[in-house]
Image (cartoon, rainbow, N blue to C red; front, side, top):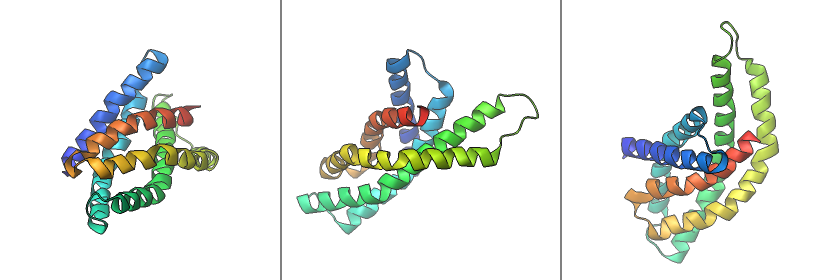
Length: 172
């Protein structure tokens, strides 16, 4: 499940992000695509295990179990994932842009940290609130109807839409 989750999460996000980019601008920024795909691929195995843990706390598909899993997932994962995604994309893309600059030019880590910190402080609260409106229903569907082995595919597919929105936030 680990390698499968990683490959599925990265692959679905790559296809989805490329589609969102093509729809929005008519072209694909390969570096951006790699950055978001690496993030989604690397977090997918963790989420797969997390969802298994939630299933062990509240087994089954009853309304009570689904609501508890969806709410706890939102409370725990929402703020962490929004912060990490925004921070990862901002830092990784800055590093890539810097590596394409003049030889001997170094990335200013303090300035990058300040950029990431400021962006997170400004954007994460709104992202977390917005994510409740999107991810709570998606998580309820995930826990109510999607078998455990298909959750990474389902959630990665849903993450494409969210990724389009959060990528807009990261890049505005």
